[in-house]
Structure formats: C-alpha cells, structure tokens
Amino acid sequence: MSPSNSGRGLYRSRKGAIMGVCTGLARYFDFNVTVIRGLAILLFLFTGLWPAVGIYVLMAMLMKPEPVLPFADNAEREFYDSYAAARKTALLKLKRKFNSLDSRVRFMEDIVTSRDFEWEKKLHGREGET
Image (cartoon, rainbow, N blue to C red; front, side):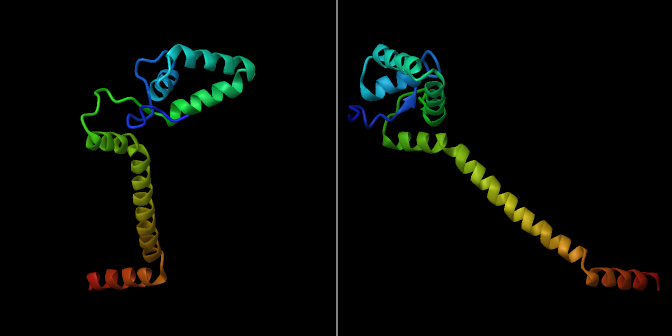
C-alpha cells in the first residue's frame, strides 16, 4: 500500500489523542483516523496489550513531530527534517569533541607525569634560586 501523500511525510500529529501516532498514520495513508484507531485498539486487545503498547511507543519515538506551520516548498521540508534530526547530529558532535578533549588531556597527563618533566621542573626551579 503506497501512501497517497508521499510528498507530505510521515509525522506524529500535534492534535492526536495519544502522542499523535494514529492521526499521523491516518494522514499519511489517507485513511479515516477512526479506522486507524480501531485497528490499534484491536491490535492492543489481540496481542495481550504489551507488545502493541511497545510498538506504539516505539513509533511515537521514531516519528518526527508534525511541523507547526505547513511547508511552503521542499527547501523548508529539508530544513525541518534536518532540524528534527539535529539531536542525533548534536550528540555525534559532542562525542567527537569529548574524544578530542580526552586525547588532549591524556597527552598533557603523559607530559606532566613523565620523568623528564620532573627533571625539568627541578632544574628550572634551582635556576631561579641562583
């Protein structure tokens, strides 16, 4: 089944009943939201509740929230999608920065704890006294 609004994108609705997953799916596949909610309730009942709840929560976490204003063009859509994915990018940047700082601190620790540093410190300390 291919979505009729494939250019629109799959987003969680901001006006949905519970996290907006059913409303977002209904808009994406151009179904009535009542039908999607009915299928979700049947899924909850027939799977013993917990597997369906896990899938629902996972979908809510993976689907990006619907934009507040509609997109005027594709450039706006690309900007929004990159912004919505910015958390992952920001975490990667932080990880790279931490690794860089960690290697610099290790390098400084190696210099400070080396025997040559102690000798230089003693040598320069005595030169200042004389």
